[in-house]
Image (cartoon, rainbow, N blue to C red; front, top):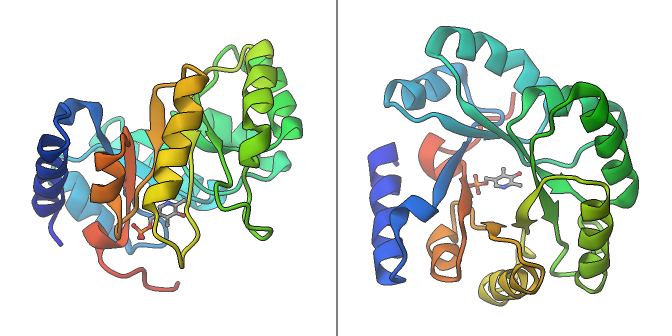
Length: 217
Ligand SMILES: *Cc1c(COP(=O)(O)O)cnc(C)c1O
């Protein structure tokens, strides 16, 4: 679906929810997409992208940014500790702060580098054993801990269980954010971004609806 159609659907969902559309950032998730599809979205003027692997992102975006100018780059995939520095150097935001050890590593690197991307704490709202993220019950104390490390927390992120209605998960995430004074809500993908916007999303992560199905490389 062309980018303008997605932008229109976002605007319509925001209006229906009585929210200013400026509150909502569209992260175009370009992971695994052929370069010509990414270029088409850049050519259309979009400048905010998401990737889920540090290695793939650093192989692609420095060159594209040299050509097109700066883009706002969001890392949305699970982050291995040994990739933390590279991730922090590359990204404007990281959506997957999901464990105390990673928080400590980020705090140390932020000190050393003198900068830190905006951070979202990933919450495993479905408490799925195979999925990363802080458990809902542990999120308040995790946020407190990360704040004590002076990490720049921007908000929370979730990926609801694939086989469930996402609505209750988005609502739950919004409630945890609100009671912790966090305003960013990274939630909603191709299949459910309108629902997420109705429930307060500030960052929607949309891949296949913009670029088409991901072609395995
Ligand atoms: C791939 C991915 C997306 C985008 O998924 P689509 O269904 O293609 O929109 C969003 N969030 C995360 C964390 C992803 O890994």
